[in-house]
Structure formats: C-alpha cells, structure tokens
Figure 1: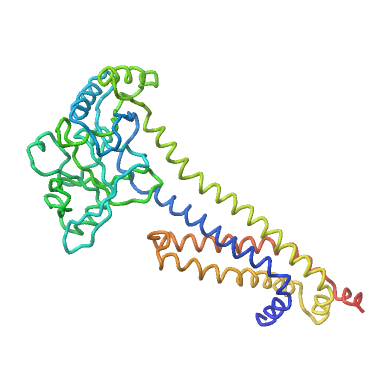
Figure 2: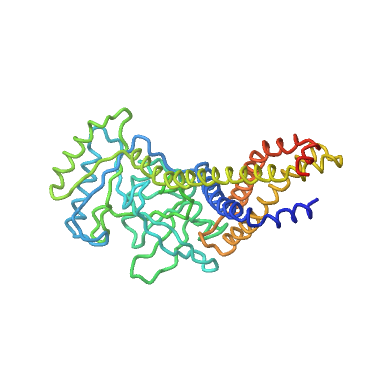
Length: 400
C-alpha cells in the first residue's frame, strides 16, 4: 500500500512540489512558535524570587557620562537621597540598586568559585542593605548584607541557588571566596544565598545571579542608579509628586523619574510577548495557506481520478478503503515535507545555535508542532476523502 502511494506521489511530483515547500516552512515556523511558547510557559512556572507589589522605582540621572564614572560628592549626595527617601511618610523601606527588577540592563561576569569547576557566566547587581526587605527576598542560607560589613576589606556577596550550584556544586557556598579576577577590586566572599532571583521577569530564562553590596557613602563605591521604595498599601499615584519634590530638594542637579515596578513589569511582559504573537500570526497565515493547498490538491486528485476510484470500487474496494487511500496520500505528502524539517531542527540542541535548549522544551515543541501539522492534514482530508468514497463503480463508465 505504501509503495503504491509513493508511486502516486512521485507521478504527481510537480503538482505536489509547492505544497511540500509550504508544509516544510510551515513546520519550521510552527516549531519556532511552539518551542518558544513552551519555554515561556515553563519559565512562568518557576519561582521569581522577589515580591514587587507596592514597590516604586525611582530612576536617577546624576549627569555622569558613564555608569562607572562618579564623583565623591555624588556618592555623598546619594546617601542623602536614600536617607530622605526612607523618611517619606508613605515609604516603609527604601533601597538602592544599580538596576531594578524588570530592567533590561545588566552586568554579566564570568565567575569562578570552586577551582575544579568551570567558570560560570553570572549576572550581577549592586544593591544596598535594605534591598532584601524592599523585595522580600528569601534568604535560605547564611545572611543578607548588614551595616557591620563596612568594616571588612572585602566585598560581601549573596548568590541565588542557581549561582551557588554553578560555582560550588553541592558544597556549602557560605564563607567561600570567589576567585580573584585580577582587576584590582577587593576580594569577594559569599555571605548568603537566596532561593531565586530573576531580574528580567517571569518569562525570562533562569540564570545564575549574584548581589554585591553597595556601600552607601563610601568613597570607593559608585552610587546606585535607582531607588526602590516599598510603599504603604493603598498609596496612590498622587503621592509620586511628593516623592519627586522631596528628592529634588535634596539633589537639585539630579533628575528623578518615579514609576511603579508593576509598570516596569507590564512593559517587560509586552516586549517578550509581542514577538511571539507576531510570529504566531505569521504561522497562522502560513497554516491557512497550507490548508487551502492541501484541500486543493486533494480536490483535484478526486476529480481527476474518478475513473481510477470507480474501477477500485468495481473491484470490491469499500468506501473505507478509498477513504484510507486519500488520507494516506495526504499523510505521505506531509511526512515527506516534515522529515527534512525535523532533521534540520534536530541540529539546534546539538550545535547550540540559539543557546542551551533544554531537552524537555525541544521535545515538547517538536511533538506539539508535529501534532498541529498532522491534525491539520486530517482535517483537510475529511471532505475530499468523503467525496472519493461516494464515487460509484458506474462512474468509471463515463470515461469509456
């Protein structure tokens, strides 16, 4: 039966060529959409690591040419700004950070913990002591930063669990030193571990993350570029003007922008969801073209092969056999286009062309895209195969 179908498809190779190309590219697009959707869905189920409800972000423009450049008076001014923010009546806790959650900005550094383990690319933020209280971080090992850390000649750091595993494996990271990077900076020592922290939001891929302690008012430390304010529940947007007024009075030469972290989250989600939506719409149009093409090919085959189908019915073939033949031909066409597509996408996790693709995400995306295409094939074959099954043996006589 399969050999007979292959012969039929080969004899109609010119008529089937276009639909084969359409199915091939549709598979690639559907695979990309489903794989990305599965990855985002899995990311959304992972722990975020912080609570941004009732938190406002204050972006600070100090007028410096680069983030690494700062003057001594800016360091002192930031300390005054942070203290003033903490005195605001509706502010429960205030903290400084180089980058707030949901920001696209970040600093990534290759870190080495255990010398026997490979270097781990880790995202780093510089935060003040109150950051854990503002975002209610879950410290699971060791401790968070505290004022007594000012007396050390090394920099305290806190890792998330992903960074702790990447740097030290199963060993206890608390008290461990990070290997010197020969940059002239103070040595860094782990004082604690938080359960998780995904700065770039719910849909972002988890990566190793580390917090460095920013010393407020210390001349050697660059001042953070933002404030995070945990507001009293029920605080309305009207209070933003009071925040701006008080901070501007403390630092007249600086520019402040207040925005709820919830607004940063909405923007972050839109930036991640919109590309997927656009590609999904494109995939939808491609699938529609494939569906119309498949139905057109089948319709033409049924009309042009009335004699063949009638002779098969006269030789005892049942309606079910005719139906299976038509559906089988369409499944064979789909498979012929999908096989090279599967061979192509199978190279992605091997070659790591798009980074590390988790096996579960790859398999789920592949199976889902195959299921969508074969379901579409089945739907497109229903009516033409039903028409073919209704051909009577006498129809063959019209061709004599």
